[in-house]
Amino acid sequence: MARAAIVSCAGTSLTADERKLFREAEPLGLIIFARNINNTTQLIELTADFRTSVGRNDAPVLIDQEGGRVARLRPPNWRATEPAATYGSLYRRDPAAALEAVELNARLMAAELVEIGVSVDCVPDADLAISGAHSVIGNRAYGETSEQVATLGRRVAETMLACGIMPVIKHMPGHGRAQVDSHKELPRVSADRETLAASDFAAFKLLADLPWGMTGHIVFDAIDPERPATQSPKIIREIIRGEIGFDGFLLSDDLCMGALQGGMGERTAAALAAGCDTVLICDGDIEKSRDGLKRAPELAGEALRRFRSAEAKRAKALANVDVATLTARHDALLGRGLAA
Image (cartoon, rainbow, N blue to C red; front, side, top):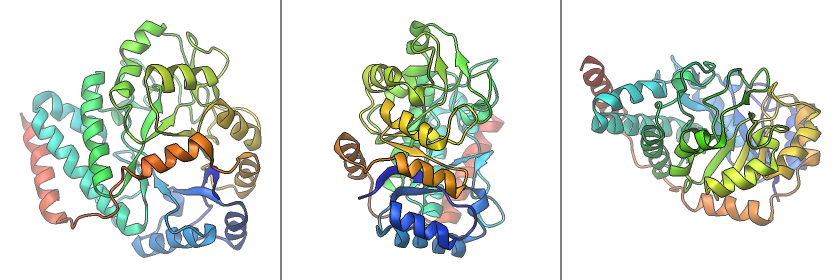
């Protein structure tokens, strides 16, 4: 049975040591980064090799393909993609056009992901664009209001599901107010709980029925001033599972990020004890993956139930995609909106 950890690898193919670790420890899934990517054929071989190593043909393979600056698949082998803010800008001018454009973009991305063996895309980002905050979210957000963010985010998520790709809403319960980049240091948010509930948390509440979600490494002083959301039983229980009402499969953000302290085993144990269903270990260091996997139990109980329930919502096959036609329509919609 798979362990409650999703790991990464160092290069464009698995090493003998990585295959051995994956075969013996059986991580739940693999997440792919730019360092793992050369071309389509190579990625097909890499994702297949991972699944062979863990002995599960349906093992999740993840990627961060949001669009814009957070896109692992890039030209010249793949199409250029727009950031979420482009669709948010169009939505303010022409909501119907924005929804069609964001759906077309999701269908095109999904077709690329299915081809290379990826089954999970860490999108949509449901954080709000907050004036004065750090740019780590910035144009990754679909807008400044929970309603706009949730409307566009839902269209992306539902399109992905219909195309055979599992979407992941992130970064719960909200990363938009961060004043520092959690890749480098721990953000703290001092806003009161009422403000957070009416804004940051609200977009996630509107998307609470979606199947997968990701926590953020961010401290909310008004709720738990000691621990970031990823490692806070109070935030996961009272806010993510309670106030927001998310009952889907919950994964941590990357435990290798600078916001967290301690060894990888300690970080893994803290996130799982707080209520994450699985963790992400993303920097490709085999020893960190090994340490995290030692502290990750087999996926069982409520975590396994949520995983299976989520999987039932994802379509098993992708309909044929006319890339040229969809791309032309998508680009025309963006041109019309930006010229308005």
